[in-house]
Amino acid sequence: MQTFAPLTASPSVVLPVVCSLTQAFVSCGHSQPPTTGVHCPESPHALHPQVFVPPHPLVSHWVAVARNAASPPPMFRAALAELGRLLIYEATRDWLPTLEGSVATPCGTAEVTFIDPGQPVKVVPILRAGLTLLESAATLLPSSQTFHVGYRRDEETLVATPYLNKLPASFTPEDRILVTDPMLATGGTMRQVIQDLVDRGAAPGMIRIVSAVCAPPALKLLADKFVGLKIYTGIIDAEVNEQGFIIPGLGDAGDRAFGT
Image (tube, rainbow, N blue to C red; front, top):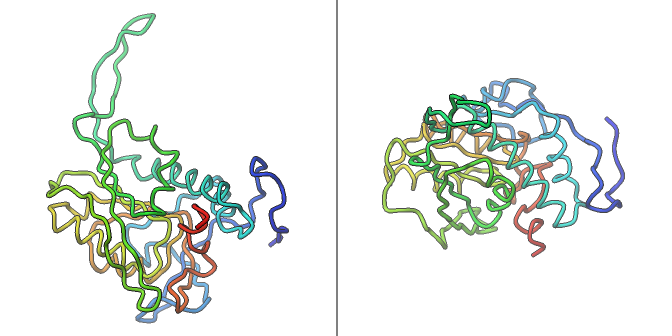
């Protein structure tokens, strides 16, 4: 595989794709997912029965831009925004509620399909990095409501604790809920968020996660805990290190997106 030099061009220059869409990394028959760089090219469904990695070159391209350590914050954030747009498109392909009707065109009458504004998608970004996946996605969701949650992870214990929760008191089992977070490493934070949604009445089968990069520990944890939950991601990496970072991953998404 060709290796490209660190980024020196302006942010408007489109970078070459430096990595193709990878196969999932699975446990190869072991009881736990791999924590080393063992590559096991099998279906992503071996890790999670409802994980989807869209085989699109634009997804691969924006993953490559986000991975590049030389991408400055504006370019990194733009890459995640584009990934979010593409992945949310895939996640909502067969999921949005619709209404049938007719409209008058300049030349006649046409039978049409609209997104039902009476059933808005509940969007839950996990602060702060989860916001980046939504920056270019507003036009994809004609009807939505946004509920922010914020979690802070202890760098030593890797345990996340909430510092903000703007979820409504309750959901219905019919509510469609979209949760965004660029990184699914150990899955601890996402498990807490999904459990909170379920405790408020949401059905796991109506929840969809959008994430830029996932790792086997998170996928296994979520698959074991929430039947029917679907995950849409740009790529699956094999390893999570002792600090809880995905390897090779793309670093701390929040720090890189906001420059702090």
